[in-house]
Image (tube, rainbow, N blue to C red; front, top):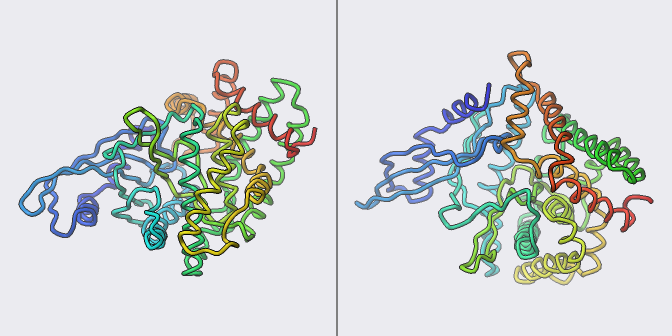
Length: 428
């Protein structure tokens, strides 16, 4: 199916009964749906893991009329049957987070008088295979906006994001202390790339992004030691991720996909960022808190912002984490020292490197251009099941053609490798 055909199929998954249930969960049992319509707001190329759209509804309640908007996440309706299990697992994990874990963590935080997590409310979920659907609060109505994913976050945005992550991490530990069984679900404790038991079928996607980084470094020249290191990382990806989920004292519930496209910001009258909301919890899992820190700082910041401000950024995280833990009644052992945060951050720099390389491949490109290229170059594929690996190969060709013309790619990639050589992660 092409993009338009796939979108129409996805839209058919949004039923009036689902909208009614979301409305009642939001406004109360007395709310009566009058009319509703789908209103797309994302761009072509943004909807691959899930279709993201919105519904605008009119309703009556207590004799008065009202209007409301909801954000919808639906099964992406790909042709590739081999990814059905992965898609289902992703939706199960995110729905469980919003309907189970989030309310419990918010209760813990409210009892500690520190508010709630910086995330949207969920009003409805349906997990029927191939018809998965999640209906969420539309944060745009509260003034939240997306930051341009190709631009690196500045210090103000990055600090807000780190505070949001710190609050999530601390809340998970406070919940675990009160309900130890709450974070034992298998889906929360699987390695990245192994969402479905016995399968690593998304690791090849990551391997291709590492291959692209090798080609870029070879073309630039002078990064021979980095090329050798990336090749070694590629050969050990599965081992790296399996070791990553082995429990340590620093394990928390991480966001798992903490880059700037999965965040919305609200701004003050002077245009400064005032509040953040974390979105898209389909990759959440129990690993070291430093995973989220590395993911954010190496996918969403440029080197000239990250490197000179690293200590301040880590201290922002530590300060919010410790404040929430203290408010929740955690003893001294539940808090992090400055040395612990830095040491754990450095121990997980390999995670930052892996996903930083992936970010250069996908984050810095215009999504619509990427999808146009994939569809054009993939037009001769056989009908039937769509080959996602073929798509990725097509996107790789497009990416390689843009190395010399896209101003974001080279400085982001080289700054990262220069830092990792300087701190000793990559041998010189």
